[in-house]
Image (cartoon, rainbow, N blue to C red; front, side, top):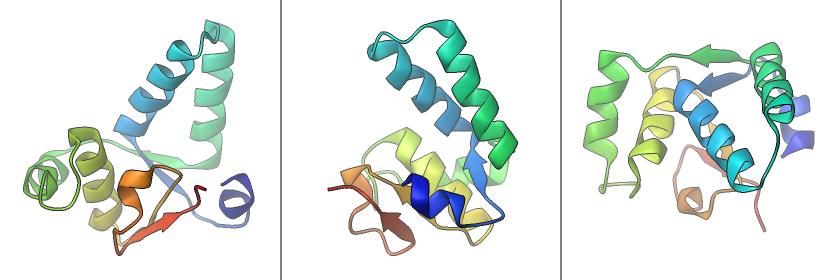
Length: 104
């Protein structure tokens, strides 16, 4: 994913992705300083798109229809709100038309 992201601009990140990053790092036992560095890096390299009413409603429509999880639905709705692609290693996105799956 790193190679794909480093060659694209502009980048956007759904605000809920920050939640998922923090959860992932905490589950992996990372310290707060490492988490802060990662979040700062995301903010420096992309624009964080907040969850607004339009994205929230769109995510509600996508849940179960295209993705199972609410966080995934918010991420997908955020991407579609600006005609962006979801770039992910999450296998839940393998068959989503506007996702670029970079996982194994």
